[in-house]
Length: 392
Ligand SMILES: Cc1ncc(COP(=O)(O)O)c(C=O)c1O
Image (spheres, helix red, strand yellow):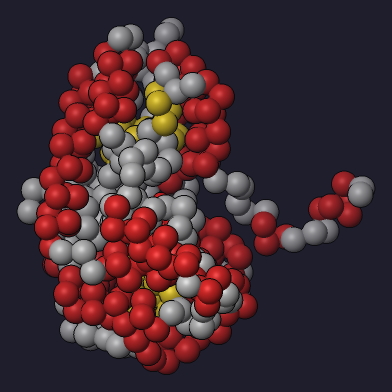
């Protein structure tokens, strides 16, 4: 095919490239580095899930499509879990099971916007949000989180809203910021949504990972947000099964009806055996989540000590499992140079900070601690073994 003909194909893919996060995983494999780039646990999921999956595979019907909205058992379990953890009263009729939160984001943006509309994205953002906007033909309106500490300023949000704004995408606990937005910050978002008739799409995939008592608040639980919120979460992070591809979207029935139409034609359904095993995941006792948090807090300590020992600056994460670290004090001016150096000379793989910003993040790199302690200790050993100061 000629270059001219190729250029005529799919204009909508031009504003974005393949994921830098996933690219860094490939670089890690090439150089034999400790992969602290992609949020990819290197430990086993809970045995209860694997056993439930084995049982699910024994049942003939689980090898076929589930209902497109999701298996009734899992939708009921998600509704029960929302009351238990999120202070959201809902029912199976308002739950759609998706192929991970990634599909949920794309389905929500496609379902709830028209081409040419605007969608607010807080900066730094999780990589998938901007391509989701491009696929839907909508324009992202970036609202920077305030530094230091990535605070959400509702006045900044208010100023970004135009007559074309339809959605606000919120992520708490946040990737890469590590922020758990306070109730006051989220009340500010709720006020702006109510004033301008906006819908919030809230990505809460890290809902069970929070530290130092900073328990997250679900935006959809705030007064006035019941009918204007799509709450997304899933199995991948909480149960260390990112490959299972099961997530969910919870929204009032009129919004759910739109999301389900898009989901049906995007994927038909999430993989049935994994949905059935998800029922067992959501039945785990509170002790599971307490242990999860304690384990992650210990992993966080190892990584933060290693990063500060190496001279990097950061805001300690309040939730999720990422640290955005700044290398400017070490003389670095370009995040890609820094990340290449880390991978090839130090043997630790991170994600260039600029992939989470329009123009910022140029002296930053994102590290994650969804790893065994021994993996993090190996990364710490490598970081301590060599000066990270830029040459020249
Ligand atoms: C904020 C956020 N949302 C969504 C995802 C992807 O979720 P899933 O694997 O359920 O598609 C990730 C993965 O890193 C993430 O960090």
